View 1 (cartoon, rainbow, N blue to C red):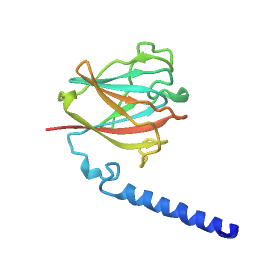
View 2: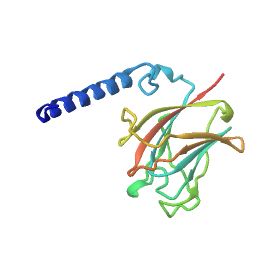
View 3: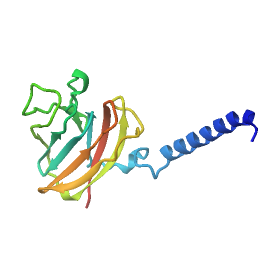
View 4: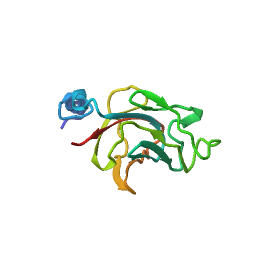
Length: 172
């Protein structure tokens, strides 16, 4: 192939890939784009995450277990709330004087009670700004049952903090 033709071919290829990404993002098969797929009884959680963090869901509430990086909401000297159904919750940490490192928060009470073993998770958004749309490329979230609690592990191994927006949807 003539080198003069490589740039136009590369540009066309990039635009085709972007077009496929946009088509997927708008597809009803993409849960992030299909707002109607989130029922009214879902629990919507938004948090600023930098590094490994674990959200635990128990019958009557949620709480954070943090890894070595910034605690949820505490990246770069911020003190952002975790939003639960759009209402702010500022977790109280056992080691409240530090913004980084292994720690556990107080629990936020949720009513009515949940059955952690009967919850599905939908990732709605992962963006630099709260309320943003789309899902930036980050490590996959891992779900597991631990001591009758749902463990939502957000590895977030990439650099920089991102807002994660999740929906916990009760199964019938």
